[in-house]
Length: 258
Image: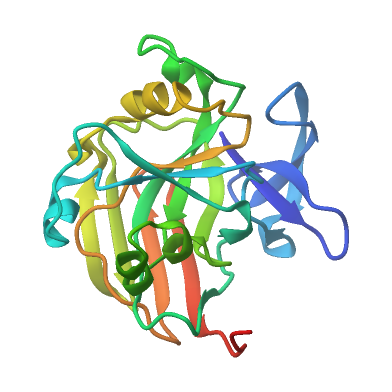
């Protein structure tokens, strides 16, 4: 099933479920008890929002060996994790804004895991039971700032640096799905999730041994090789087989520092 967050006009955002080109209202929370109403809202009438409002976004670095190699870095022996602020999350169709502090902002196409219930100290046998579903993520990164700082918070934490969407797919197998990224129709990234160094199950077990995962939290599972720079006017299109397509335009921030 596909779950969306959407808004009609100036109404309050709400969750729905998607059937073909129509949305049905969800009464209650998809992370708790809920009831599906008839799918009778045309998708074209609604504005799709980021499909979830996470308390935190956990990123995973160098989880594809080819990506580690393209940056001259070693593949980690244990998952290399970092946090992106919830304020970095935007929806499909919203603009990735290039900050004036950076001269090298790059795309990173990723499978995103959405947590379904509170999780701590998960075990490999039942870890996937705590997953609500999957969506598409773009771990946008100011690469020059990441290198300069020696840690990743600033380079990955700007507003708009975490596009998610367009929906959450609950009927999805993360073991072997094709991920592609195109910028203005140019193919930049293409790999299968089977090439991940650490599987979704391994990531869930590891991360939950460190922090409590809450319903709606998102894990970005790492990006394949082929990351590249974004320029104002670009259109980024990330596709994951079995989920859909996440599209975002790129523009320059017109603001000033200070």
